[in-house]
Each structure stands twice: as C-alpha cells, then as structure tokens.
Length: 100
Image 1 (tube, helix red, strand yellow):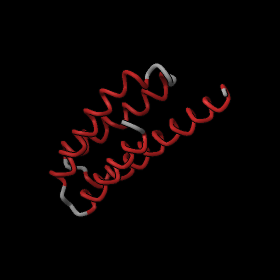
Image 2 (cartoon, rainbow, N blue to C red):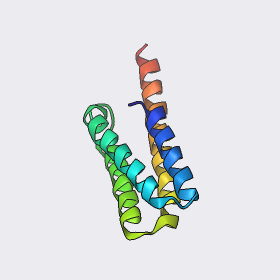
Image 3 (cartoon, rainbow, N blue to C red):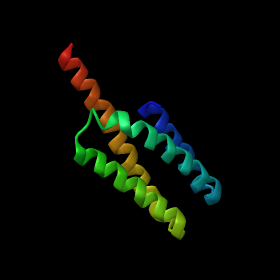
Image 4 (cartoon, rainbow, N blue to C red):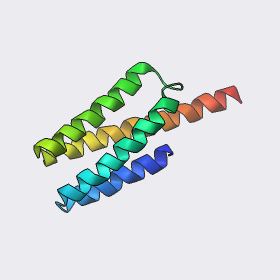
C-alpha cells in the first residue's frame, strides 16, 4: 500500500473519531496497523531505523489511546503519523531523483 493510501486511511479514521464513532475508528486503525506491519518489511530496507522507530512508536501510542479511551490525544498522534509518512514519501522521491 502506498503512503498516499495509508494517509488516506488515517484521514478516514480521523473523520470517524471526530464523529465520536470510536469503535469503528479503532477497527479501521487495526486494519491500518495490519497494512503497516506488512509494508514495514519492505519500507525498513529504504529508511533509517530512527524514522521507522518513530513511526512504530506513534502507531503504538495511537493503539493505546484507543484501548484506554484517550480519544482526544489520538488527533495529535495522527497528525504526527501523517507528517512522518509524508516525510518518507518526499524523502524517497528526492532520493530517486538524485539517482536519476
């Protein structure tokens, strides 16, 4: 799944959470996490460990917020996660352009 698709998934989760449909948002987040876990094996070959650790840390935070009912804290973590995902996308484009 592309970074764009992952970010779009997070936007859907954001809307569900904004509408206080937290159970459905958490279900969607679990699907996002499963997709990330599969993609991570490929992505880890292309990015630095620190960046991967940051993303995995935010994903763990979001999961804990949903499990503990700290829904307001979700939005800040979602913003950071989207920021990191977009950063990876931009960084990889720059790397590819450098090679070409």
